[in-house]
Length: 169
Image (cartoon, rainbow, N blue to C red; front, side):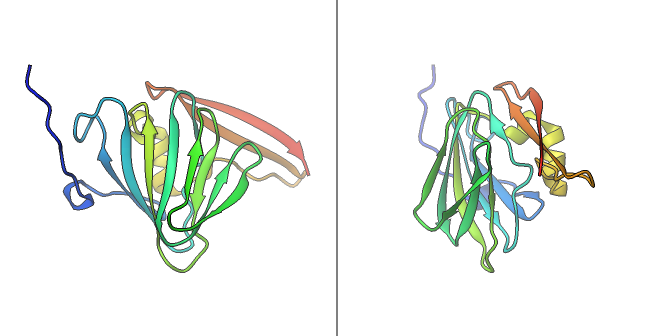
């Protein structure tokens, strides 16, 4: 059996993944460096950008770590807003809704780490198509003032599950 060796990787070494209002760089993953237990990457969210669709992972934990710029993490069932700045980390346990937005006029650069390994857009092409278009993970209501939230969750094999929650305003 061949001995494993360290691998250096830079965002310039991988193909940028251009999605609506942001660019992702998948740096460490089973598909890039044959990692076994985690996926790691970087996102650059353009000024005024939002990472949609928001989602959760049934069997993965995730961390966002802000490198540069400021932003807002949207998290939990109530979609609370958590301001972030450089050196802030936000941890998402399994099943916790999350998204990130940049309401400011400078780019937001953040690292993301997911364990166990596997990137949600590799696992679910439909969700990647939504992200390319900037489709939201929750839709606001109709004329009858009903708000319906659509939640997307994914297991380790990339199988998506939708759930809905409705409420009156």
